[in-house]
Image (cartoon, rainbow, N blue to C red):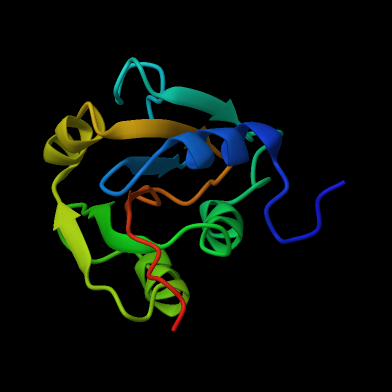
Length: 139
């Protein structure tokens, strides 16, 4: 039995076998997660129904189990999506690196992307690509 915020066995397995510089994509319900990411990346389907689970639900659990060194987002033309404020709340020490839609797809197809997590998120442009950081030694 596991005790903690993140207990999904596949996600834990992928994180445990990944390292510094590996990337994790948390994708909204509109994202083409079959074709818009590294074909070798492990797919985790958490899109139970519309609105469940959300990208921010998954992000909140992931950050309890892994250090995040960088965060990249898909920026639409025009106004910034409201979900970016939630990303900043969950990742207060990071600046969001914005890419236009097709550049974000190219980043997500990188061989460094080890996992794609599909969510039921209904907000558009709610995708985030996380770079796994390092675990510093305890003092």
